[in-house]
Length: 309
Image 1: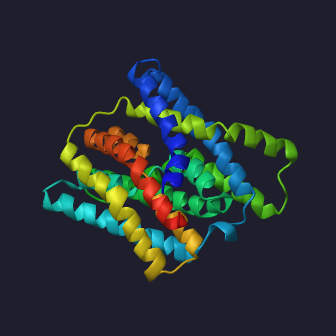
Image 2: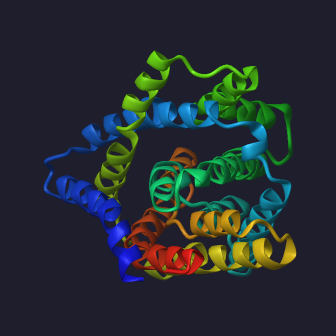
C-alpha cells in the first residue's frame, strides 16, 4: 500500500503544484484555460493517437469489459438520479448530479497515470472506458438537459450531440489512430517520434492544469458534494468491481484497470457542461475539489487492491 501511494504521489504532487500556482495567482485563470486547451487539443490528442495507432481494435474492444463498465457506471448513475428525484430536483439538475457521481477524470488523469502505474497493457482498456464515457454518458447528459428544456426529443438535440462528438479532439484522435492501425502499416518513425514528444507533455501539462483549475473552485453545497464524491470514489469502483468480477467476468488484469479507472475523481468536463448549460456548477465544482483531494488516498487503496500490493 505504501509503495503504491508513493508511486501515485508524484502525480498528485503535480496537481498540488498547479493548485498552488493558481492560488497565489502566479498562474491566472486565463493562463490555465490556455494550458488546458494545449493539453486537450494537442498533447493529450497526440498521446491518444499514438496509443490507438499502435493498437488493433481487438486489443481495445472487449464486450464483457464494456458491459461490466456500463453496468457499474449505469447503476451509480441510476442511484444518483433516484436520490436527486427524491430530493425534488428537476431533470436538468438531476442529470448533472448523476454525471458528477459517475464520470471520472479518465482523460486528463487516468490515461497518463494508469498507463504508468499499471503498465502499457492498460492502454487498450483505458481507451475503451474513455470512449464509453465520452460517447454514451457525455451524450446522455446533453440529451437529458436539452430534451427537458425543449419538452421533447428533437433532431436539434441529436444534431447537438453529434456535433459535440465530432468536435471532441479525444474522440477524433482515437478514431484516426484506429484508422491508421487498420491499415496495418507502422507509423513512420518521424511521425511516431513527433507524437511521442508532443504526447509526453500531456502528463505534466494535464495534471498541472487540473490543479490550477481547482484553485478557482469553491466548496459550496458541501453536503451534496460529499455525497457525490462518495458515489464517485466508493460506489463507482465497487459496482464496476462487482460487474467485472462476478456478473461479466473478464480477465483479472483488465478488470483491475476498469476498477482503477472507476476510482478516479470527478471529471473536469462535467463542470464545463454544467457551466455551459447553467445547471448547478457550484456543486459540481465542490465535488471536483473534494473528490480530487480524497482520491490521493482512495485511488492508492484501489490500485493497491487490484495489483495485490
